[in-house]
Image (cartoon, rainbow, N blue to C red):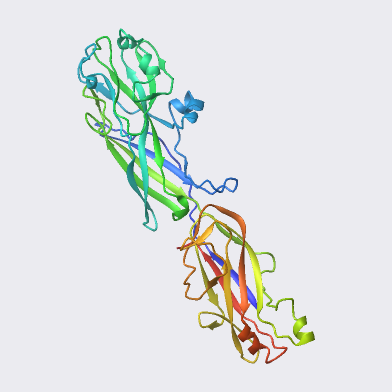
Length: 411
C-alpha cells in the first residue's frame, strides 16, 4: 500500500511598517496613532502565547529611563503634535483642581473589536491608558507651595497616580510622566503662585493591552480602532482651564498572527507495508492466521493554530479507503491518527487513535493548548481480522491502494 501525505496551508506572514505621530492639519480635530502587535511562535518559549507589542516607543521610556519603565511594565509614546492652551489666567491656590494642572484619563479597560481583513472573523481587544505626561510651559516656580518645592509632584506624582521618578526642566517648562493605575481617578497639581498663561506642547502616554489568545485566531491581519474624546469632562480630561486643540484621540490597531503548521515525514515514509504482529513467520511456519495487518507511521508536527485533518482515497469503501488485488478483490483500510501532548480535539480531549474518515467527522478541529514544536505524532493503518481472513483465501496475492492524509489550516 502507498500512503501519500499532503498539507494545505494558507498562513499569511505579514510585516508592518509604522510611522508614529498624528496627521495634523489646521484646524486640527483629531490625533491618530497606529498600534501594531504580532504573534509569532517561539520554539525557545512554546508556552508564551502572547502578542508582542511592535509599536515603536518614543519619549520618556526609550530615551530617558528604559530600565525603570521595563521594571514597572510601562510603555511610552510621545505625540509632539498635541497642543492645549489655558483659556485664562490661573490664580494661586485655586479652589477647584480643574482650574489648574488636571489630568483624568480612561484608565479602565475598554473593549474594541478587531476584524480579520480576509475572513471577517472578529476578536476582542481591551485597552486602557496606563500613563500620562508631556511638556507644560509655565514658570516652574509657580508650582512652589508652602508645603512643597515646585518639583515635588512633577518628579513624583500626585495620588492616585504613581511616580516614574523622572523630570526634565528649565525655568519655564518641564517634561514629566506619571503611571496611572487601573480605574484611577484624576491626578492634579495645585500652583502656589498665579500663572498668567500656560500651554501643553506634547502629550505622552502609556497604555496597557489585553489581547485574545492567538492560538485560537486565524492567521493573517486583524484591524480595528478605538476613539477617546478629549476636552473638559471628556475621556481625556485636562480640566476646565487647559483646552486641547484636538477633540479626539484615535488608536488604529493592526494585529498580525503568523501561525505555523508544519508536518514532516521520515524519508520513504510515504510507502507503507502492512504486516502481521511479528511478521509473516507464524502464518508461514505454523499456519496461524494473523489477527490484523497494520503499520504505525510516525511524523513530526509543529502547530500554533487550529487545523483539521481529512482523508482522500484512491479506492473508496464506505467511509474509508480500500485496498485491491489484481483479481479485483477489495478490503477496507482503517486509518487513524494520534497527536502529541498539547494538541486537543474539538471536545478538548487528547487525540489517541482517532479514526480518519472520508466525511471528516471527528477530525474537524484540532486546537493547540500551546505552540507544539516538532513533536511526534502517529498515523495508524490497519486491515481488521475479518478482512484479513478474506485476503488469506488467496495466498500470495498483493493488495495495494492510495490514501491521502491532509492537515488543513483552513478551519
